[in-house]
Length: 370
Image (cartoon, rainbow, N blue to C red; front, side, top):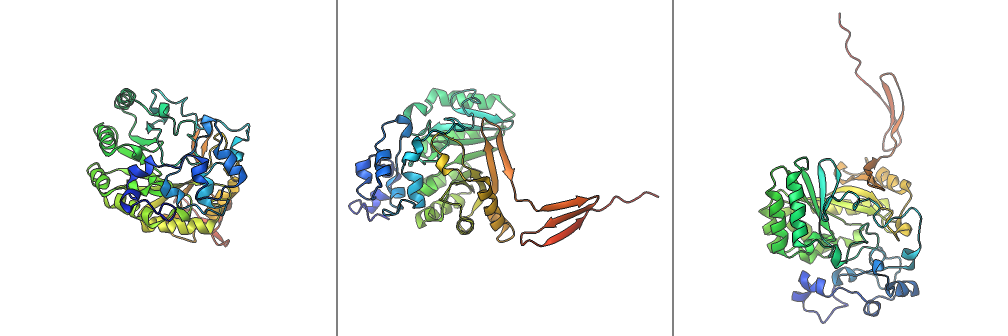
């Protein structure tokens, strides 16, 4: 992993703070260990603040230096395609700001809310639907704004589930993170506290033994992460997931479907099996949101349905996630499933199973009273 940073001692390499402090941020630095295409080089030099990018050394070490189609590389390194405008795209595709009663809160669903804890991230995913915020110091809430967010949550007893998101909330130092989670745990009507983090995939060094033990004291915590390709499933990532699971965290994966990166159903099946081995349940496949500059990542809906057809019945139901579209404009998530119902008449229903065979199911007719 460290062959491109041979001078860095293992102690530093495995320190998440060193990783954050040494993010790759310049084209000349990136060019030292990746053979950039001309398109990538020009995109990396783009000065538009909305086009920011950064890569943790760990995640950069997973990149194939010679293959522009490498799935890790395409998620991390910008290309000129991001500068091509498309009319269906928006800076805020899910209308999070429209549903933000106070700066750090998005409240779209009746009983759930998102708490935006920080704009800091170890790696700026090129498909990120919050690219308008991530990496911008101005987007991180101040202490006063976080207090206002907690006040809002305390005042709204209908909210029973809060998702701590960002950026990446695990970018916060242990003390600040634990204090925030403890404040949420103290709100009586908050039954579920979730952490949305990509760090098990992009900065697994963050999941230290100390952090895991401190999270254990706040159990139950739900941790939703994002692995998008089997290449991200490294021994370091496995150790991070195992530590979180051992600490009592309930783990779920939210894969974003990306054109040319993870449309292969067999790869997704192998990745989901790996996740289950490390006690992380495949939870969602997300259709890529229409954020600005992401058109080249978005797939046909049929690609997601094809993945489900390759999973349902062919592997454990535990390895089959929900495939959802988070509707633009704040409409919320809607699930999509392959069509297995052929027809029905009266109490008789005709189905096609996962292998293409047809079966009839007859509903129990209500008994006639004498």
